[in-house]
Image (cartoon, rainbow, N blue to C red; front, side, top):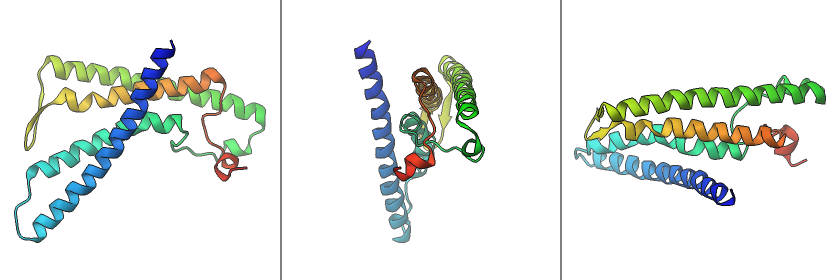
Length: 169
């Protein structure tokens, strides 16, 4: 079990690092594209295609890590006015809802990915790419986010970073 946990953690952090690398690569490619155009040359259509794909893949790579680090976005307006007992129950309900939504999207996403693979669907842009290779990151990401929310629920941990935690109090 320890090896599975280690492998999962390596995958989670590896995805986050790959997402960070893609953000840096997008910055470089967009800069090169702007410079090339301002010098009066025609830029490569691959620049635009790469950026489009990266804009889909980057959030998918980073989202599970953000959930683990409690970096996801939430509104705490109602929660901060509740007493500890009702707050705990509402947090459990929200956690279960998060797991359910993530698993439904992952299930549907794996179905779409499988259909694209079996149907040999292609995404035709400046270069042809198998569509399943592009959309496979969506179900993987949502499955891993579901796992992360489940981990918080299993441990009985508050998966929302409170204002006190954010301020270091």
